Every structure is written in structure tokens, then in C-alpha cells.
Length: 429
Image (cartoon, rainbow, N blue to C red; front, side, top):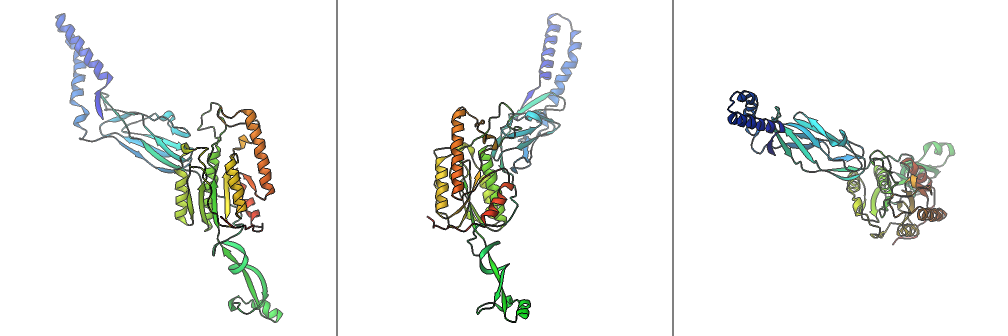
């Protein structure tokens, strides 16, 4: 922080010099009376130089109220000046998909000033303060300070899935989902005659006394399963904003919907005690091994929050490895890449129960709309949409449901209906 005289002090010093020179050259000592107030002002500035009051190494401080947020949560960036300096201006340029308060990030405060940041998109956001201008209480000295950049990690908002807790085909040993097989559990399957090997504690004495022979309660086993979330991040399709402010346009891209769906599904099944993992066929999110518990939830949230959209590359394709037969696979994709659809079909043939979450924005579902960018011609996009509709119809014929992502409620009915389908275990790779 380097102190400099203010514009007012410089003007006063120049005026004193000019009046003094005129008094000497014109032999008019009475002119010095006019210069006296300005000379006193300059003497006061030298006597009250802030360097005498500010300790050595005492610099302005910068504090961020929160570095890990969810989308649309606020964080306050506060800059505090060392006494007796006052902050007259903070200018923070607005990054994309972030709302600043006050508008344009300009803030003024007595001793400290605060800019509120409200990111609308997940990921890592870097904020760099252009300039912090300070002055003393008399407006005699000014100083500019270059604040260090700050980084905020923003996670997508969690949308509870709700609905039934049914799972298509539980494959674990223990868990909360009702299995079709008999075993130790709390859900009554049937009341049948007692046979050798049945536990005495499960004898139904009411039915036994009425029928006259021993009868026992048969229960359904409760198991968990493995849920693998496949994310297609090869492309990011968005609707043209047409010059509107991208913060307030409220338009989500296909990548935004993919991340939101992945977080909602993982949070739902982890809360049920299942094992959940993420596999990204691109290189934006990365891979998270299947696991359960609070640590797995934190790991998945951190991985989604730290995703880097700038690593998107259509040619960077990663093939899916081994999937356990009977696993529930949630495939989040806009269904536009041939490689992604090919991997989807292979998962189905390996015996996994596949549910496709269509993350193409609803605004692009109409043939008249097209993604932003000059590479998408209207005619070419209309043809590609027709091909995409045919591919979705073929997936439906194979028994692979495709559900557009319109929020968490769009999946609950389909997941419940999948629980009634017979298992199609064909083996895994």
C-alpha cells in the first residue's frame, strides 16, 4: 500500500506555490494572506500523514464469509482498511453466472466495505478485485491496494427425489430395499406351514391356534444395491441468450442439468444406505468409486463442485469398465453423441438395469430451436433432433426408459416402475 497525496492536496500545494511566486515577483506581500489557508492545509497534511498512525506492515485485510457454497447462496467479500484510512471505492468485475451486490461490484464504506457474491452455477469461481481505493478522514492522502484473488467452490443445489424407495433388483447382502427373495427382514411375504429349519420365534401362534397346525411367518430379505451414475459431459448445449444478462436469463445448459441430476440421484440413494459411484465418459467430472455413507456423499459433492467445464472435449471419450450384473445405472446424457449411445446399449446387454436421464434442455426440444454458436445450423440441428427421436424410440423398444430431467420429481415414478420388471442378468464384463 503506497500513500499518495490526494488531488485536493496537490491543487492546494500548486496554488500556494503560484501565489508565493506572484508575491515575490510583484513585490506584493499582501498576496501571502491569500495563500495562508492553503499553506496551513498543506502543513496539516504533512502533520497528519497516515504513515505515522499506521503500523509497519499493517495492510488492508480481505475476508470471505464462505468459500464453499451451493448454487444461489451468497458469500460476502469484506475489505477492511487499517486505521485511520477509509475505503472510498471497491471495484469487482462481475464474472459470468454471478450476481454482485451492489451492482457491478462497486462498494463504498467507512473503514470497511462489503460486496455480496451470488453464484448461479456450480464449479470453481475466481474473483479478482480490480482496485481498492482508500483515503484518510480529511481527504488529504489516498492509497490503492491490489487485493489477492479469492476462489469459491460452488456445489449444485440438492433436489430431493422423493417418491418410493423401491430399487429394481437389490444385489447386496443387507440394506433397506425389499427383495423378492425370502430371508431375514421385517416385511411379511406370506404365512405358510411350519417346516424343519424354521425359527420358532417366527411361529404365528394366532393362525396356529385357529388351524390346528404350526404355521410360520415368511419375510422378504432387505438388501442394498449398487447405483452407478454415468455422466455424459462430452458436449455442453445451451439456448442462445439473445443478448440478455446470463445471470438473470435463467437458462440451464445440458451440462448444468447433468450435474444437477447426478447430485440428486446420488444424494437420494446414499440416504437409503446404497453404494453409489460416478463414472464420467468425458473428462469434466471424473470418476468416483462406489461407496456409501456420509463420506461418500461429501466426496461426490466435492467432485461435482470441482468439475472443470473448460476441460470439455468431444474427442476425449472414456469407455465404461466393468459393471456388476443387476446394478442400477442412471445414465445422464443429452443423447447426441454416438459413442455415448453405444456405451448405453452395451450396459443394457451386460445385464444392468439402465435408466436414461435426458439432460437436453427443454428449450432445445422444439425443432425450431437450436443451441448457441455458429456451428449449429438450423437445418442440421432439425435433422439431428429427428435422428435423436428415433434413437429414443429404439431404446424404449429395448425396455430402456428415457426420462427428461425437469427436476427431481420426474424420476420417482419411473424408478418405482422399474422395481416390477424381471431381472435380465446377462453377465458382466
